[in-house]
Length: 208
Image 1 (spheres, rainbow, N blue to C red):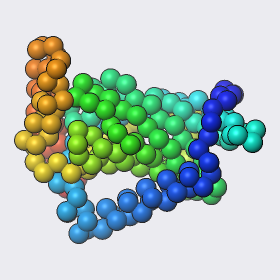
Image 2 (cartoon, one colour):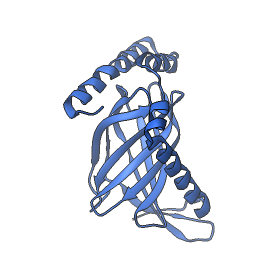
Image 3 (cartoon, rainbow, N blue to C red):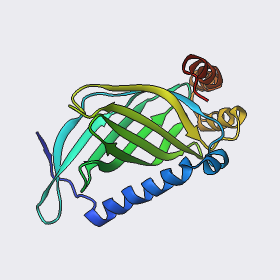
């Protein structure tokens, strides 16, 4: 066990974060909201290695369970340079929440939140945040039994509020504008390949 004496978000605030994220995801799940909010997807191939289990100590000295790990892989054609995930089991055995960070050469995800839901078969992590000025949502799923003891890996299409491929490439181009020429050119080329990755995934899986 890893014991980390960190200041923990007050329980009411943690519950509010999970509730707000759940409401946001529920609103986006309706067909009308989905059509309005999510227009252009980013292909992702991600994995979370086994999590570390520890505790946070709140101001009263109470211990609260905490899961931490990394995220590895690619998003929108770009390699993930650094990413972490922190999960807090909720008051209910079937739900929890947390935060994540994620950075590519083009920029970092801001306000990264996670909603965790669990049943007897699988645990689902729903990720939500802002990336390159656009909304971003994606999910990862793993077996509930022994959750976190093995690597969770998944591929899919992340919903975004980019209106078109050209807008995504333009956002990446702006994000890498101050990098070295070779790195900048490679990132733009990789981002431009997202459309091909999306099409290949859709053809292989039948995903819309």
